[in-house]
Amino acid sequence: MAYTRNEIIELLRLEGKDKEALFREAAALRDETIGTKVYLRGLIEYGNVCTKDCLYCGIRRSGDTPRYTLDRQQVLAAARFAYESGYGSIVIQGGEIHSERHIDTIEQLLRDVAALSSGRLGVTLSLGEQSYETYARWREAGAHRYLLRIEASNRDLYAKIHPDDGMHSFDRRVKALEDLRETGYQVGTGVMVGLPWQTTGDLADDLLFMRSIDIDMCGMGPYIVSDGTPLAAYPGPIAPPGHRLDMTLKMISVLRLMMPDINIAAATALQAIDRDGRRTALACGANVIMPNISPEDAKHSYTLYNGKSTVADNSIGDLQAAWNENGDSLHFRRR
Ligand code: SAH
Image 1 (cartoon, rainbow, N blue to C red):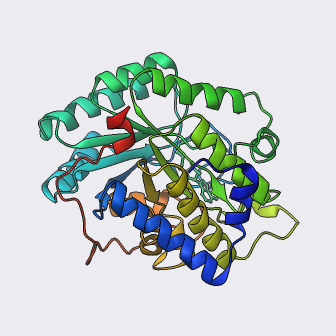
Image 2 (image 1 turned 135 degrees about the vertical axis):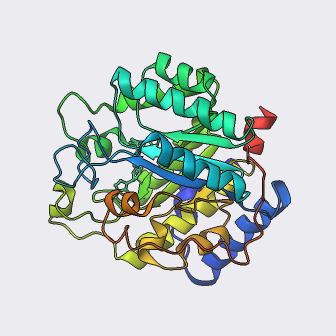
């Protein structure tokens, strides 16, 4: 559906029965377009060392969180677990590092992961902004999807939630998304929902941004305060958790109606507000879930926001999972 900005704002304001109808319509369109099965991505939290200083993030450079990086054996053990459990794909996510050593290490890991699954395990990376050459090297080594949230597509809002230290540029982030496309990845982006200063108009623009760059995948979740970060000291009110959850669900539904054949993840942050948050998102049009398969210590040190390390529920339960499928986005395959 090619909605206008005003139409999107109206949809994002729906409440009660109309909102429920929106959720159902989005889920029905997903079922019809890409099927009822949920893709599984085993999430490996590679490390929390980061050169960036994002004002909302618990692993920002200036924070005092103890740092860790998984070693090769830990990553490969998690990847093997995902492969043998039939998850079909993994996500390697972590802080943004640009050193040659880091780039080499990831490249080698990607080759090892490809070898242990004969290239069958889907691999998504989420390691921040890198150079065109780095993206190309990692693509060549076996990664084929990349998740880089724009975080906020309004450049003024982006500037408010990132420091003005020369390291955080809206334009560079957009350029990174273009580089990912050019180097052959399935490209995923997303935003945080319920940020300070954010308006419903901003959220509508976020969805229009995603459509304009023709994304293959999306991961968006509620903003959750992370104690000790500069944004946690924001003096104004932020929307209550239930509202942020609800708004995220509406964002997922509207995006599904706008881009029926993309992959949309039920973000982990939903679970920090509501135990069933991710499952609810699946009933609103999302089709990807990312069970955390990081080693226990890492789970507790990868502290993006409050309440994250207590997120324990990885149960796939009665979900209709797409076992052993690598889960490429239909949008990408049709391209
Ligand atoms: N370094 C990578 C991965 C970042 S962490 C990158 O830059 O892409 C993954 C995501 O966690 C971020 O994109 C951000 O949207 C989300 N995140 C960080 N802090 C958060 C918070 N306080 N509340 C909700 N989500 C947050």
